[in-house]
Amino acid sequence: MDGLRPAGRAESPVKVLLRHLEPITWAYFDFLLVNGITWLWYVLMISGRPTYAWVFGPWMTGLIFGSCITLAGLVFGLYERKTLCARTRILVRSALTVGAGLVLAYACIFLFFYGDTSRWLGLAVGAMYCGTALPLRLAAHEAVLSRSRRALCVGYEASVRKLAAFLERAVRPPVRIVGYVDVPREPGQNGSGGGGAGCGPEEGGGGRLPRLGRVDDIGPVLVRHQIDEVIVGSEVTARPDVGHAVLACLDHRCRVTDQPTFVEKLLGEVPAENIDAQWFLLADVQGSGGYETAKRVVDVLAAVTGLAVASLLWLPIVLAIRLESRGPALFRQKRVGLHGREFTLLKFRTMRLDAEQQGARWAERNDPRVTRVGRWLRLTRLDELPQLWNILRGEMSIVGPRPERPEFVEQLSRVIPNYRQRHLIKPGLTGWAQIHLGYGATVDDARRKLCFDLYYLKHRSIDLDLSILIRTLGTFLLGAR
Image (cartoon, rainbow, N blue to C red; front, side):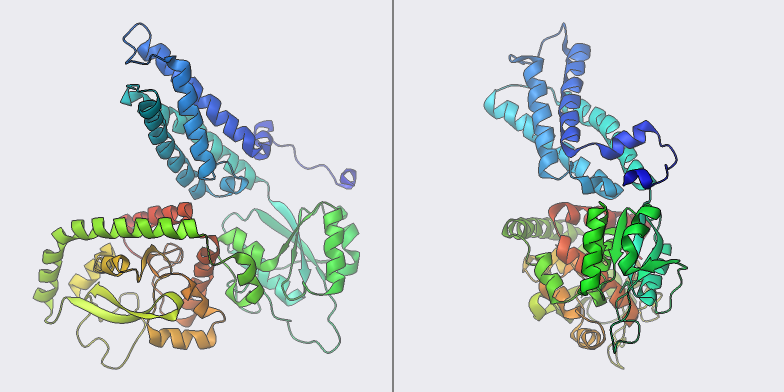
């Protein structure tokens, strides 16, 4: 079958090799690399000098450092295939691997071998490992993305064109849709049949895609156009004729993905209007007990530490607020938290006292109700420091969807499908939506944020939380959006 496909443009052998390296190969590479670095350190720095009580020799030191860093890489998912698909994931997991691996190695040497190891060795291993393995992984990341997969859509024309227009907004999409095969409508069915990208473009979006045939003729289309992936519209997945087409795709060794999952993997968001109860069952949104326990421990430690450090800023902030506008410096407001329970959120006041005399309003960019001190507090996110108390009380977490006011939750739940499901986890100081979008002032903004909140609900993990915190720090340094 593959012989029927015309040959593509030759690629660099290095790119091909990096793209197809197995996860276990990366693990072996790290183990051997760290061993080599340790031996190099011993030859250059230690040979002919006192060995710092390394009575067990450099070979044992290399074995310990190599094993610990490789083990840390396995724990943090550094060797998973999906790690190479995202630059941020590579950087975060590499940092976790090096940090945890070095700490574990020194602990093993001290506890089990009673050795006194030079601290410079750890710095050398960390620096040389990052200087060697990290560029290779980033090159593998570029190799993975350099070859766009050829995709075929299966579905109604309107839905397919929406997805095509949605892809045009993506930065360097790894998939190029070459066309679609349409599905005949069932008797009595009209309209677009629903579906679409959900969080993507508006109805009637662009995307000029050629019609390559009907769903019944999908086999020859796959061969003729060298299709690597088939994207099935969510509105037709239950149809028998589409089911037969999916089996044909598998016979042709093509990857088959439903449209919501495709959008989720490509842009890190879940098309909220395209999912149903089955999605929540398959997504395992309850999370693991170990993760939730670890997250709570981190929340408490971070809140206690943060409150201790923030106490130095508390008095100057309160004085600045009171000097500009009369009234309390601390602002209390009802918000909706875990499982829809309301709690009192604390913030430093950033608006005038009469800001809501005419009722609740959305926050806006360059909101005229914000004071000068309040604008600076929002820019630096210092207005949210009192929420560390909410975290300590267990009402919030460091990372999670931002809590909304009950009035807005009621309004948004009526017009946005699955909006209340964002309350299946604790709200947070920062979240996946906050690092992708700025302040929301409309229903459409809330709909888009929900797409990111649902993605976090499904994929939340320690490394994703750390990634969010790192990117939040970048937002803080560049100025809040």
